[in-house]
Length: 209
Image (tube, rainbow, N blue to C red; front, side, top):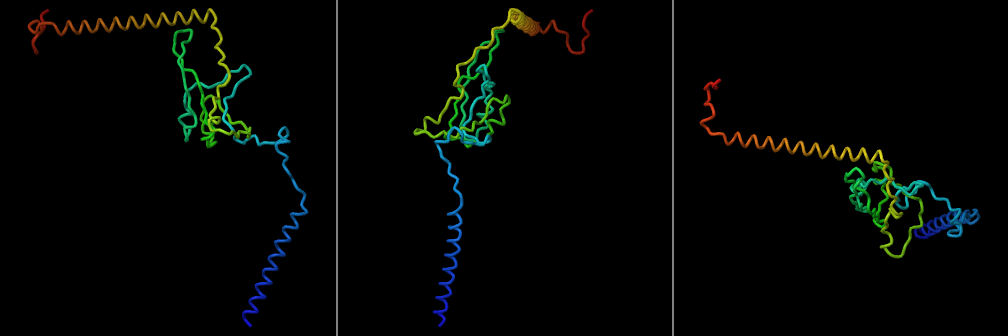
């Protein structure tokens, strides 16, 4: 008797579970469907502005970026995704200045943590929300972010050139003066070391007047 009772009990439980599942299925069957017609609706597709898709340099209307090649983003990247290659150029006033040569970004190893963006001292970086980044080869995931031709710096005015030349001459004169003083001090020290011991007064002995 017990086995027959257990059988019908389990049968009733199974039927109840089936009816409950079919109720959920039937409800979804009559629910209006929302279908994303991608890629046909690519032009009207809404992507959240905060979505992080690909790192990029921010260019202004003149084609200039604000990267100063300090390397902060490269040091803060936990995956080594960023490689900043620099070069040295000479300014009109004769000084050496470090500038960005190539900014290499590997999208395939990026964790989208945004440490590079938040730590940039000049706010030169940002993430785009262009989610269509699929490619067939990994090599295409390595991108050079400074893809635009480098815009030359504006030519200095005659007044700026004159001021730079004057500052350069002043630095040269100051360096020559410091070198001369150092040479004179070294010569005086050498002459003092060459003075005979007999000519030097003994300790406690008064110097002749």
